[in-house]
Image 1 (cartoon, rainbow, N blue to C red):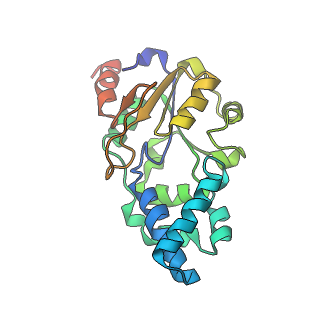
Image 2: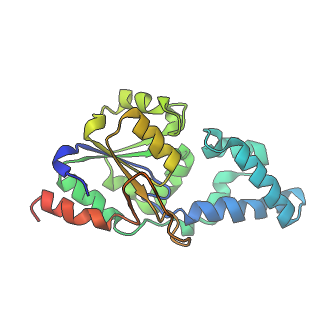
Length: 224
């Protein structure tokens, strides 16, 4: 799908791209509403409806991804609640082989996530993915989400990369558009971020369900 001789850096999203989004969907759509209802004496339906409105109000902003924001707003210990269901955290198929082949091919592997540092720590503890990556970066460190076009210039200040020789992989179309607007030449969408949900239709970008279609080209690039 890509000419690996023209790619030096691979920027990778975490939730939905390297990790199964089922954990996050279950957590925010089922587990948090259940605990919110119990804490505030609401019915499950009322809690769910209220939270959907509150989520939507900050969707795409840094607050949406911020553990501390939601702990304060909802009166819940979000980190503790994540730990209650952290057995659902799972690495997508073929991710480890893909990351290790990237290393063998001499590509720099940088995780670039909107997730809060506390969420990142929990997921790395559970998956040990950090051993297969060269650097882990959170949008909270830059004060902007990846959806904001200004994010990429701030990223480039601390993690220099040539947009023309970079591949960026994400499951979010708004984030991919933001990266495209910045000039990142190679973009890839994930169509099955949540393995429990139907595969999504994606238009405008190369797209795969998982990383398996990229493996043959990488093996060829390193002479396997």
